[in-house]
Length: 137
Image: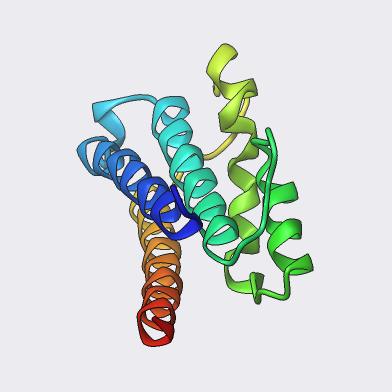
């Protein structure tokens, strides 16, 4: 599988986490820990798709901060999406302890919109790279 195909696969898997987020958009539907986990998973897969699409590597890493830094080192402008690293605790910590210690609930619609913006951006990067591949063949 080439890097573009791998990026497409990660985009597809991220869209499945986003679909789960859509089903949990109402706070009374499910706890923030679960919604946050799917948001974190979507962002992780999207960042990895971006890295993969441009020919980078991320190794065995689930830390959003490291993935964002990897993209920055590869010359990508990640500033607009850097704040999504706030989802890091949902990958592990919030999976095993309750969120009751946090004062405010997640703004699910705003977070879902931010994840969609990242998804749209990565899709456009992959589409651009696909078009370059086709024009050079």
